[in-house]
Image (cartoon, rainbow, N blue to C red; front, side, top):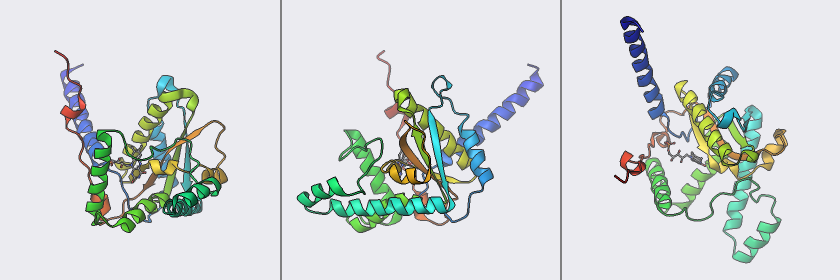
Length: 258
Ligand SMILES: Cc1cc2nc3c(=O)[nH]c(=O)nc-3n(C[C@H](O)[C@H](O)[C@H](O)COP(=O)(O)O)c2cc1C
């Protein structure tokens, strides 16, 4: 490579690195969206970027439902209504709770069961710290169960995002399907951030599968793993200022025995 070409390459490479880092660090989960619509062109751009992701032997073992417009609104209402019903059942005395759990159509029918109760070990501490930080940013008092419940409920209407995506994987690809779909989701989120949009990956949207079956022909065998809200962040919303701390590198790296 000639010297001037090399300088040019380094210049471009350094600029690229700086811009990329800015995109990476400015991505944060967005939990309040404006009603500004997202054009089909923008959605296609983001999805086209996402399919550039690596996957095990290029198997790309995922499928995506993209819900927009009226479908997105209807889905949100359906999921919210189910959430409210199970929330109510949760508050009943044990025998009624058990009876309802057997008979209610609102019971979760997702493919991957969430961890019930506490997360193991240090992960529960991190989970609680993240939740506390979020509610503090929003000015919700620790003991205000109603406000916390209402914030949780907002998951199911995608925090008012105009687009909701649902990621399915083929379980025949075992754990690699989950790794591959996670990488693809991150590409999607970074592409959206780069275009000035916001996203929130939402495990909560894996709780119910059947409302999606009403609107979409989900290919046989595919399992719902996660959802994702997409839209333009609402301005001046405290919740969008929340930047949970990441681990120190020393907490991440496994030191050598030497
Ligand atoms: C697989 C996965 C599931 C998540 N599920 C939810 C969810 O259901 N609701 C929510 O508000 N945030 C959810 N999040 C967002 C995390 O809370 C968030 O990524 C974490 O607190 C770090 O914050 P950051 O994304 O702003 O860096 C999820 C993130 C991931 C990766």
